[in-house]
Length: 77
Image (cartoon, rainbow, N blue to C red; front, side, top):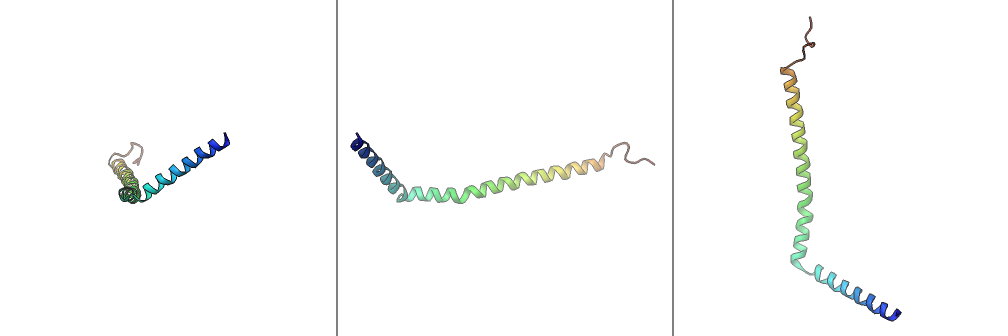
């Protein structure tokens, strides 16, 4: 029983090492991996900056609208 388990574990380790070797030596996979690592942070950063700009624009628009339409009690003599 133990011998069979050892053979199964050796086959799994051997299969994993072959799979890892085939993956690391595959130029298309490495190109795709580097491309993803390169572009994902830029995409995330751009979306965050765009979201911040939209919020800033909305805030300035709201302030400009408040100046145009003051509340009734703001200008009491």
